[in-house]
Length: 416
Image (cartoon, rainbow, N blue to C red; front, side):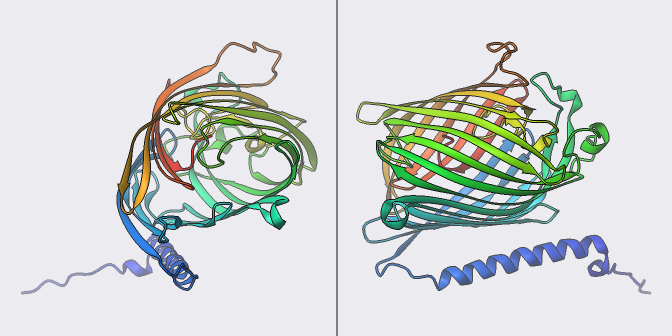
């Protein structure tokens, strides 16, 4: 009368075992971080405000994100935001469901740190810790340190040069371990000299989009095709007279740097030189701020791994392009952005400025700056929307349009 029904043993199947294992790992990491945060010291008069935020983003490489991110702002009695906790659950149409935990700490205006942990149901994952201290050792030094381990399955490679074609698009995933630091010493006249090192261990694997050719099958002969290990040593001279490091409205920032890198996999040495400059011009008591940025970089040497060469595209260079869209020995990027304060609100217990920022990004890559120096630039117009809680918190959404479509980037801090 009754028919026996066989229930599949999902737990013992390798694929579902993998999903459960990754979900369990994400849950353990988040629980551990919450436990650490629970015992951290807090101001005596601490208050917590909750901002429920929907999440949407789209990009040429990363696909579409849909999700939810409640933001917990912890502030003292003076409305100074000293910590932000922002977990999220986001569905991506390429990588699946992603569980993310973010902690941003601002113990003082000059010292802050960030913790970021992400685990997808698929293969993507990341753990990153960052620390800044601009008044180290009684204000004589400044320090930036960062350590990250991640796997990202949304990477693309189209070939080298400004004429690389969409038709040659390939897919790969990047597994990377990358600690770095920069230690700067304050000189007179708004100058800082810094020394830094960055170690990279990169492993190239198959990506998520199997409908695209695999990088190693279409470009089998490029340097770094299987990954590699590098150590970069960089010296930077900085001039900075901005009125604020997080939310500047006037002044200028300029960096000139030189770098020597060692590729241990290929037993080779190569160099990198570059510069960038930013000018901030304010009008109407800071309601309008014009920002102009220019940057160039050039690598020199033979058999440089493709992931170590100059690139343009993404949220901090040409926002109408996917990340790492064009790659070559060097690049030039010019950004023009007008930041317009629309209104100021006292919402969720803090004062916040809300801005709109129309922009134009221009840039191209080069094999030599002597060839066609003023031709072939990509021009990407767009508009950004920003929410600023002074003195240290900036949230943004930037929409950039280029020849290959629309990109929307969500992030923290200004793009430059």
